[in-house]
Length: 154
Image 1 (cartoon, rainbow, N blue to C red):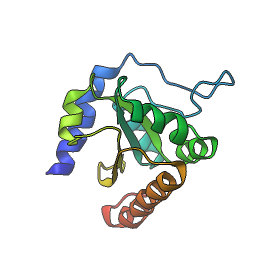
Image 2: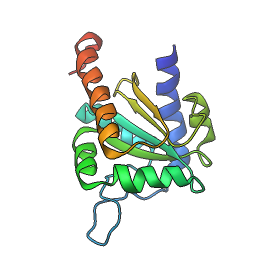
Image 3: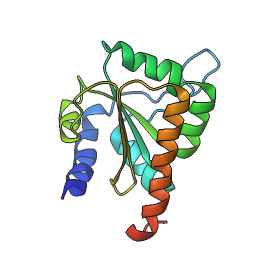
Image 4: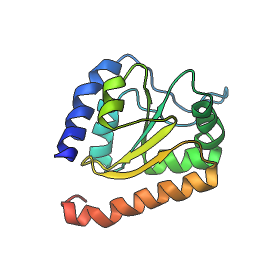
């Protein structure tokens, strides 16, 4: 039931964020992460490429959220790993309150990893340095690899 709710939330709430632009790697110092513009795009890529979605919940006013993105997620090695292994999407809780409620985001920053089938693979609240974050993300990816045969996915 929860998996169905999460899946429906992803599909239903994406429409609210359709006008955001995708951040792509540029040499002028912008994000090296290939952020998807909305959950719908992330879900489609996740399903097609069998990569987990990396949902990073934050807010413009959240200092720890900015620190997580700048010093951890945009670390060159982390960004490379994330781009190769996950489908990242940034979700501003102020503009997407419903999806934050459905996924029970209660503190920021909050990072949630979902399989292409909307299984919860990992949930991490608060700031983490690149090393600890890498371990958490690798564990989430390993969980996907273990449950994929049972769920009938690739």
